[in-house]
Length: 129
Image 1 (cartoon, rainbow, N blue to C red):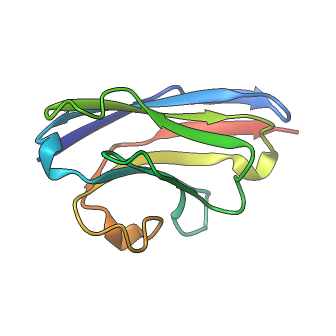
Image 2: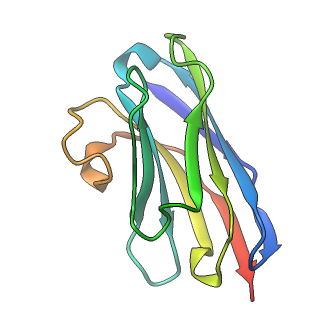
């Protein structure tokens, strides 16, 4: 079991930046990758960034590529890790609830909702134009 707690959300004007954090604890040795998803009202939850814990490879959705950066702190710790999402040049379309997730499967479709088995409660991001 992996516990995920997000923080860092808030309100910002378009063009501004935010940094989200996800503190992961528990059986991290069962986790292969961690990602960030977001969900706007009335829309499906979409994967936007993910990182493979042991090799450090990252994957981004086209909608955030070049603006968002995912990183991690404790890749070698088997019981905890912190994953960050640095968000720059924010747009109103970036508004929504942001969720951290952890996956134990293969690195085949790392932005797919089905690839993840642990989820945080989410942190709200509001970007005003």
